[in-house]
Image (cartoon, rainbow, N blue to C red; front, side):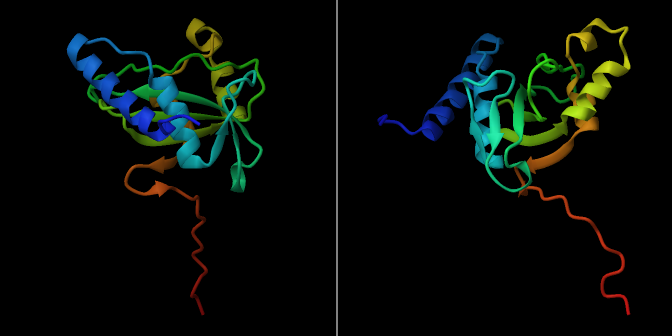
Length: 169
């Protein structure tokens, strides 16, 4: 067993990555690891580093057994547009994609979830774009297609259906 817990190591990695970016103006390249850790922790997923095409699998509830690609993006300046995700592996086995958004301190602020069907439909919609053919997508477009499933203020967000017939006599 390691002397350090993974949570403590990730916390230190966040601090170092943020300090490195402030000192050099360049990213350290650790956001994918932090995103995978936080996605698993906050949504009850189990990491599967050796799996081909997905990063984690759901352990409980509506996510149980679902295979997830996990994408992470640190947003350093919300006024700047054009942030993009890494390539979505369209030819691999996965069921859903998570987008873990982090602030300038690499602290997770929001997690969005999208289905395979929605992503493939969107990526196929505009075949003339080389970026879309390669599986690239903007953060804004992903958020538009996805559902917010976790945020820092509320934690896990459960999709509840509003019933306008309740308490109606």
